Image (spheres, helix red, strand yellow):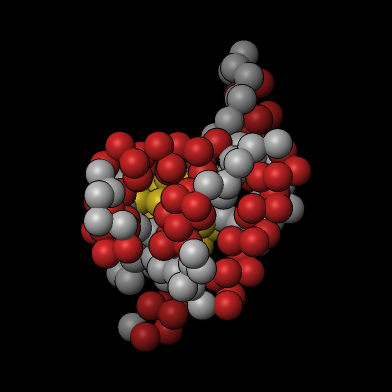
Length: 155
């Protein structure tokens, strides 16, 4: 059954599926569908919004179905959970990384846009500060709130 996603999203899904195959894990049709629903959004989306969209495509979809798919996608580094928003954002083509890479997000308070950045200096500074405190960082998600360029320009 074809995804029925636009060509740009279908290409990202193919890229994600290839990444999974390289790792020896399976991108099921359902996982692909959930990832596609996330990728076609311009902003982070919550699990229940995903469930509503999935029910349009799969009548019997239930919360555990979505949560299991999201868990897999997070483990593979294909989506991130933006804690501040309790929502998910895709991460397929933005970085050449392994699953579990450090995530850094800029969240606009006005429009809600979330931008993922990959600043190695920021990750390094956090690791160094933690080491000075006798702490070893095994993973970190940084969420910074502010106002994006477009909203500042519109003000």
